[in-house]
Length: 340
Image: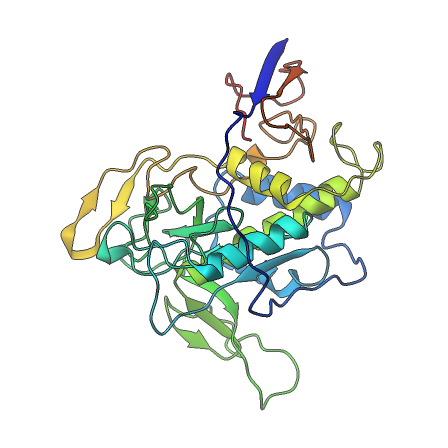
């Protein structure tokens, strides 16, 4: 039995939040689940330990079908690096006022500029900012270092107020996605059946790199996490065996970060070579996406899971939680990991 104590000091920093000054593309579509029962288990098993296969980005095609979440990847003409801007504040405010909504933001592609290169709104506090690591597989470029290395372009923290960023990293090099063919009708797969080379295109398939490729991978995974709770998998890991839950965006963020695994290879700095990478640093922070270490399926994943969602801890108050550690049915870790 482990006791966890969560407390808040009597003095807190209060931020003055303004209303939204920009329109967010928010969607709450009638529920249509993303994966069937066996697909859920196969995805977690196949893509869990190393989410580095280049075709994972196909999930981006269904992200907007089901869950209250939003993934944003865009470029600013004049990037505001490392600052907590009004834009970042507005994103945070929206998540605070809509607590089931999770916004994921690409960290940026200015990593070769070094530290303090994460752009707004990825500097937000409530949002989940996503960096990129190398890929693997047949479409990988020659000379790639492999999935244990942070990509050279992946923007790096800290923020101007000292917070580590990005939050996690995901595969962002040689990622295949749909390439628009506006004048064609029918299937978009290459007529010759060949996957495009790195950063190339073949008919309706496109290979690209960037944190904007990594972010949809995480967004699709967040969709599966929401489905896991809404279909009654938690806590036994069996569909329909438990009450359906509607997880908050903060809980989904915590699960993604808690299950992430540290990269051990290093940081690709392009022509400047490779530097070391450390847990919780400003290159990888919590590490690479790993669904197999985030959710519990009996005998199929590496963790057991206990969550506390929408708990209230007032100023000066302490809440104590008791957690029983059960190492059976596939829990392979010797460590207790807690993410608030």
